[in-house]
Length: 338
Ligand code: SAH
Ligand code: SF4
Image 1 (cartoon, rainbow, N blue to C red):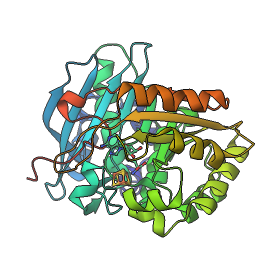
Image 2 (cartoon, rainbow, N blue to C red):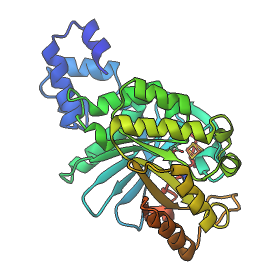
Image 3 (cartoon, helix red, strand yellow):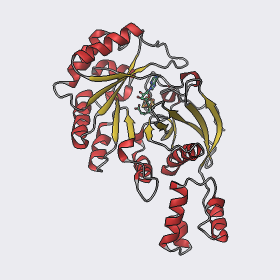
Image 4 (tube, rainbow, N blue to C red):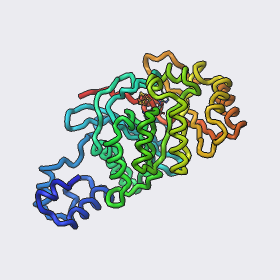
């Protein structure tokens, strides 16, 4: 991030190293704490490069343990977006980042989709979300353990900035977060999954599936018309074989829409014989304003999950964290815009 500044000021390499260590590892709170640099130099830096490209404008804590939503404003145009931190009981601290403001994909069950597309976030604006929570956790002597691209936006439609952000999170020269601790969640942009493979991405992938067949998927995820299910599934399977990592197939259970035993059996059929790298993450539908859908009944969830288990398909039912503060998946929609 400071490379242009370093070049214009003819800084030696060790100064860049000192900066990166303080900024990305020690998670300093301001340039004043960059004490390995002479005062004049860090003052000049402060005048040239903002310490953060985003500022928090509102924080909302959930009554569920450990979930907090932060509304950020980006300094370039004052547009707002949200990120979430989930502090799990098992010690994981997961940051759910946004890669866009709004989303162009338009899934009918998603609050972000209802906003439409507003803007892409830059790599630095994505990284700044992670750094913000990293600084917060540091005060409690804790660290970020996972980053998921499950906030606002479709990561594979802002791939260049997302990959640049992942490079900064993962590189030992910067944050040094293990690549397997990073998850890209996608609605299924088939050619971009190929691109991920070509680029040698070794992180995790989650596919938002939500329907076991093309017709139903098209109805609730209009993007499915463009990227049909058979080709999408074979591409994701190829990705899993390459990385030797299980893909998490996200499946929101919506009452009467996609949650019957027939749907569960169709899902089994869709996965076919080879289920080595399959994990189905069943998600309770989080109600959003203006959508006619309801959460599945506990009995329907149990029956659905049982059918998957009968066919030895690994599956879990996700507990919703933070739905009381509209911080759960698909509930992110910016309330304030300036
Ligand atoms: N655009 C990407 C990542 C962001 S959405 C994607 O779709 O995968 C993150 C997750 O939230 C996805 O699995 C998405 O399908 C899910 N989601 C969206 N709306 C939801 C809702 N109302 N209830 C529960 N999950 C929802
Ligand atoms: Fe976009 Fe994901 Fe929401 Fe669909 S679920 S509209 S892809 S953010």
